[in-house]
Length: 518
Image (cartoon, rainbow, N blue to C red):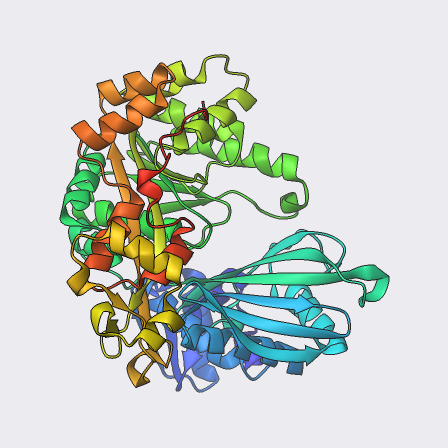
């Protein structure tokens, strides 16, 4: 089959494929002289029919054909790794953990935020598996081969290794302290599955409601999409920040196609329909963190010269990136970005720290301009109870309640909820949920649209007053309160909610105002 493509350049090969005797070509190439010449040659090889497809449709068919062809060309360990990815995809896992402890290895899947054991392997085999994944399956690796004692990053994007609806896999390794391993160093490999959600469609409201946002919060998002300024989305790793950004950007591009949408990502995690995705890291630059940072900043500056209306920054990692994002907002652009913080208003001290790192003496004066900081969003993902087997808390036997709900959580539930009749807990599992008691995830979120008064409190360093103003005057609802609201509607399990929120249910009554953080 490979010989069939002799005579085609690498670029042409990425825009044609042969399937069932038909030569498929991307519409963008159907009139190109190189393609016409190649098709003429193909007719002599017995191919009598050609079909052109729109570029997006072609890419989907091409990826599927490449995956099927690649499945017959893999080594035994590559085949095992590809099967591992396929099984994780079928179980809707977000991550795969592969740990080498020297004499043995273990593999876990993270599904609905929970780790599940998948397999144990002999030490020699897990070492080989990690080396093969990093050295032969991954691209854009920081070095050519895997070194257990070194922290490394890479990415799997070759279609022959990926399930049909997984866009790519982010690869990260960490050395492990392990007395049983050679030299006392084992290895932990993390594989983050980045699902291809290009088939998602609809307006902003339908997408956000599908993620779990309430109608009032959807209204706030709608307002933010209609103005310029910086909107920052925060939350822990693996809690859907990139997915939310994808839906917001695609919905805007679908509803207002007259605007130019661009993204800066390192590297792009998901395909974004109708958004120009600018790649940051190329070649071996990933091996030099300083160069990687400079390239990231240069990409933002380049995007600003490329006439965008709406700019998405995948993550604000560097002080210079924080400055560039604010500068973009000051020039009248809408800028959507992510940042790691512990709640909505907690974004402020994180940004302050980054701006201090860029030698800004008064960063809050710079940040807390109503033309700059438009919105703050924080979200966590919480598993949704299975409708078929969940148990109403009031009807649960004492034995079952004790099994699924620790006493301290039970006491907090009684104090936190105002509608205890609808509170449910995890059931015993059934066929509908794969015996785990949960199906899917939803967000527990807080959405803050800034105004002059709120920014005034923040600029003056009065975070407790800012928090009270947001809650009492602006009607703000914390992510914990959002989770309790969903718990009262019977869709969240109290114990799993606390586990995924990382705080107890009475946290909103404790100090989350940011005292002492600025």
